[in-house]
Image (tube, rainbow, N blue to C red; front, top):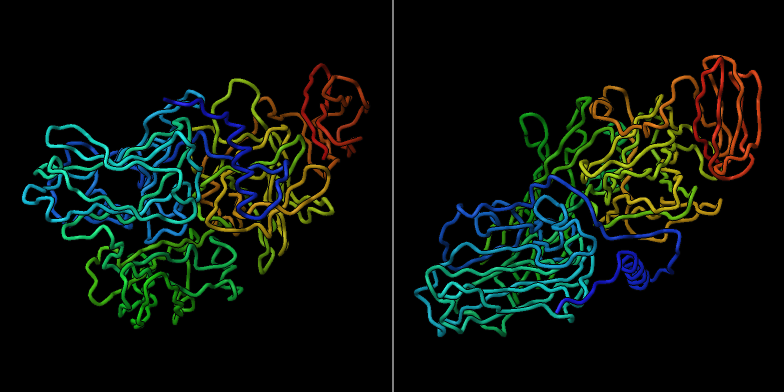
Length: 606
């Protein structure tokens, strides 16, 4: 029986309660974390695998989802998201995630709160005809519900099925409520029924979920089928890479090269976390190689370092020798670095997960996040605001602000509008730039940053703030990254007071700074523009402070200020250039008229 699921806002309330309780935080109504309900993204790790691309494989069948090409050679995927962001403490690098999005990262259904079957992941045919129950074939895997995503409800499930010789799919395992949300649980199933021991054996995972969004996450790691295994033995003869750094710099995950070189303390030395899944100490070696340039060349590398690795996970630090001093010049378009993290281990039965390659970019973007949202963030209340504090070694030119929106759909009604703001100091209210009446990207933009170009570039000091002020009471849905944490630099404002954010993680907003040549590749992208109704031709409103504007017109004229109810508040006669101080916090209409020509624009005071 399908139970009626709770409403979206009930899910948001429950999610925020759980997040507050599990992080030890009190729950504040002004800030919201929400599941991602609507979005699109072109993600190469979310693939529909064509049914004609099939081949028979043999035992052992092993995949830890650390390399997409290997996964695609072993599985038929439909909607499953292979990633390294949703698993919390995964045993090895990479997981396969099941949710309510299809392979295009779109909801399976546009019907609100729809529920049903979602993703599937099916093994290639496996020849098991030579085996019998006496050969003790074991299927094992690690599973986690929620992780960094959305927690499944009681009626949601993950199911493992086997293809019987008669062509029917039969259930072998079904998820339970006892599966952990923050750790991975080991599951083992012994194949004792000869129905599954044939030359076209297949096994598949499928999930049921709310299929109207990025809901109800299950993560799978280290799927393994082989003979002569004991259901009592959860060890695997594998030493694997578990994790590598998100960035080579700190606190920023992405930054311009000239700021990085100006302050050596930004450099984060390489490290590697290695997982020993066996039950014995293993002699293990680790190293790195750093490549850059076009074509790629080795710029820096380390020698193998040997260690006796105990069972479990251990993190090892390494040290750059030639980076970054070996890189003399960097193109205006930026620098892309490829890091190879490599291990070897004695007696290792599996080597496909002994190398992880990760790409790092230095360019005009300055950001704290890893580029992938797991949740959506917003602040409630008309006139509410959010700001990030950024600190750089030297003043620079800021050209645009990039914001990653999720949960956006095309609307026929008036959209939720906001202002993109650059502050010198949020506590004094001193603004350096403000771009009013902006719209979030629509659904076609997916998980990509929207570029909001300033009308004129501004010089920012070594410490500045970037964020938004919203005109709607609705919480905007900005991407929220749970794998990084910039909470110490995040501020929100709902009642004329700036407060520290209550949530660990990172709101996905990035300033674009540097020279024009450095910023040009982003400035050349289509810019997110003002709502058409607010296009200004004859008059202009330039923010001066949080409640005042410099009003300019092409000719002298008469001005009238109204509130949103239409009540006249002030009049100004025969002016074309003056500063207007708004009387209180809120949204106002200023109307200009000259020689029969009339225009109106909205102003915001907060």
